[in-house]
Image 1: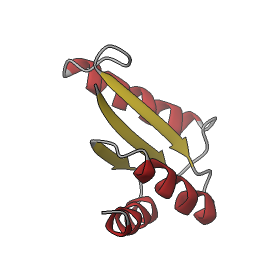
Image 2 (image 1 turned 30 degrees about the vertical axis):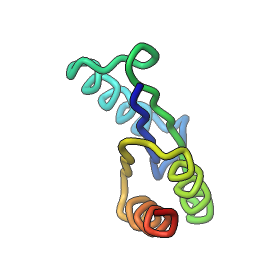
Image 3 (image 1 turned 120 degrees about the horizontal axis):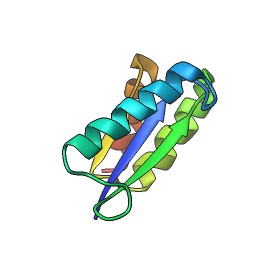
Image 4 (image 1 turned 60 degrees about the vertical axis):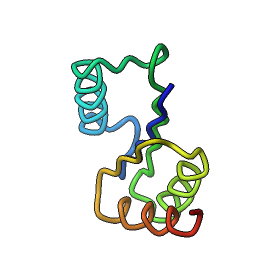
Length: 87
């Protein structure tokens, strides 16, 4: 079982964020990855809050995923910083 952590910068109820999540899920399915049988995807939404980005970046890194996906520059920057600290 593989684990993927995904951190979106926006809010979970934002239609654009929902569309991005659906596209990501569709792309995984198209590549043979199905939530449950062979992959676990942990989604987090920061709702534009830098403190939430930092908190969720740490939380996702602590889950030790096989892949981290970040949607924006601040998300990627904080995820990389957290990952370096926990290696």
